[in-house]
Length: 260
Image (cartoon, rainbow, N blue to C red; front, side, top):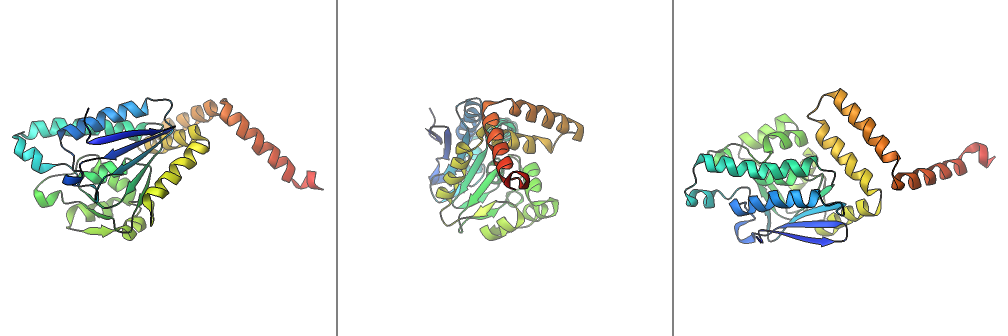
């Protein structure tokens, strides 16, 4: 089994750790396949309620390992095939009902932006840096960057990152909406967020994530139908019945009429 991405389990929490620190966690062919396989494994596991995505070493992810690709003798068709394997994993994570928090401790470059943006909540350290670098080496965006990046920061800022040799810091990334927040201890904060999901209405958090992430690409009517079906399905769950009953009891207790 490949150790390029580590999977550890802590109850309902699945932790995926990029583990090529000597290469700044750049994605080679083996790591790309591991990414796809783990995406299918953890998103179909009903015991998983939340996912933490983090990385070993001083960088989160430097994108695709273009040095390894060039040395392998693989042509453009092979690169396309590999991109599609990684894209399968990205789509699987994004469209799943598993909320994901990414913990970013260092540099994120190229396709690493796409892997990071697979997460629904992103916590970065104050030292984190974000850069494209695609065009600098004559390549075009992949790993979901052309879709996920403008969805996060808007088209103009996405183009600014992709068309200029621009590196932004964590504070700017938060201001742009590329990440969710900056934390002095992003690992601890990431775990705190994941635990909040697991200790709360876990299934509802997961469905809310799924509705938001998939809704951007569908017709409004389809989104409304999905919302109606989802809230009805959630209303019939034991988790919801207990919480709705507690909410109703608290509302009655605090109503002016009953307090009079």
